[in-house]
Every structure is written in structure tokens, then in C-alpha cells.
Length: 324
Image 1 (cartoon, rainbow, N blue to C red):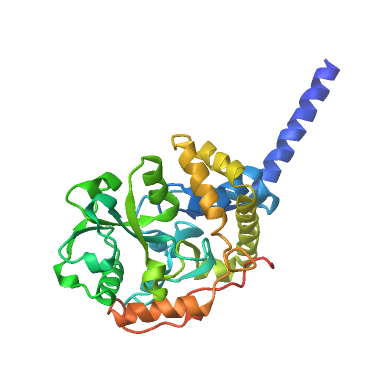
Image 2 (image 1 turned 30 degrees about the horizontal axis):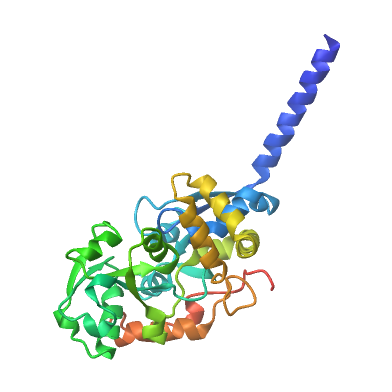
């Protein structure tokens, strides 16, 4: 009986210590921009490897359910969110600016562009006149396609714009002629399906369109009141992305463990593609610079999406990134 009591006491102390340790972790919520995908792998790696816990953080990654991620972060529904430069700039220049800042670029260059089915022989924005474009409905989207068409000598006013119904690349064989694709995801889906496309990267059509997408944001409230938490979160997150660069296949499998319904071949190919993109042209993951912000901000001004430019320093900070 004495041995049993001793064993029970030891177990009780162990569970109490575990509960205490868990209680000491600081809760952190990350809101994605969409469903989990390879843009987010570094965070899932940090979660899987226990690197957030090593920093004293209890991180939960969730999908947006109540509106735009930037708005949710601004009102305190989450601590960090996945956003993009256009959304941040629009949020900060609106009549009622949102109190948010970008704190890390997930990918250094814009890996998106316009895609058409190869069978229609639409190979340039010069061919977009009179065609049908299926859009996502973003405020700067029409400005982008207007810019590239105008530069190519096509008449934007003849373009038929419809809202995407989410039917995917197969719609390009039908009534839809043009879609906005993401190289690490949509293009690879087409490859796997042997669906031939003509692809036009926006960063090659206009250098101003090589903006940060996606990126990590937080609120000014979190920055002001929990700066050490921001540093810890970005330290573990950076570690996750660097590991994904060095071990893309393993990290595709880690992501796959969180989203088991995904095609693993898609994850392998996408992860290997992004391994070269997360830190392209920079010495540390997450780094941002004024030139990229200013170029795209001026683009939005030029096309009437926003009325006045906003200083890059008001949009982002590298302050919390770990040293290279």
C-alpha cells in the first residue's frame, strides 16, 4: 500500500509539473489567409518540431472564418495573420485605417501571374482584349490587369471580368479565358493533370508588381504591448522556414500530416519550388525593404486604387526578425 501511495504521489507531482509548464506557455493565435498550403509550411514545421514551445509559446494556427484576416488581426481576434502587401497598404490608407503592421515577408518575390489554356493561344496581355477574365475580386486586381494590358497596347475596357466560382483550371477550356495563378500551387496542379497553360508572371510584366505576397502581419497593440512575444514567434517561425529550405521533402510530409487530404505529390513539388523562393536575394528569412513597398504603393496611387502614398516605414518593420 505504501508503494502504491508513493507511486500515486509521484504521478500527481509529474502531472502538476506538466500542467504548470503548460500554463507558463503564452498563447498565440495565427490566422491564415486561406486553407493551409506550402506558403505556411515554416509555421507548421515550427509547430511540429516544438520550436514554438521552446520559445515559451503555445501557438494555434487557424483558418479565417469571420472576415478578412487583416481586419481580424486589427480587432484582436488573432495575434498574427497571413496577408499580402496590397491588403496592408489598403488597410492603412482607408478612411478608417486598421492598426496593423507587416513583420515578415514569407516569400521575397511575387510568384503569381496570369494563366490561359494553351489551346486558346493567348500568350500575352496584348491578347486579352475581348476575352473573359475570372477574378478574385481584390481591390487592386483590376488595376494590375489594366496596367499590363495598357502596357501591351490592349484595350482594358473590352475585357469581360467575372467573379471566380472556384471551379479551377479546367474552366480555362470553357467560357473563361484568363485566371490569376500562383506558381507554387496552381501551376503545379496543372502539371500534375497534364493541363498545358501559357503563364505570364506579373513580376516580369511590370517590376512594380513584384511586391510581397504573402507576408506576416500583427497589430500595433501586439507590437507595443507584447514585443518580446513577437521576437520569440518570429525566431521560431524563421527557424521553421530555414529548415523547410534545407529539407523540402521532409517538410512537405510535415505539412501533409496536418492536411492529410492533400495530394502528396503536389506538396512535394510545391515545397521544392518554394525552397528556392523563401529567402531569394536576401540573407535572412522575412527581410523587407522600402523599395519594394514604395514601388507598389506608387502603382496603387497611379491607378487610383489609393489616393495618397504612405511611407514604407508606416507599413512594415524588420525590427523583430532574428539576426542573419
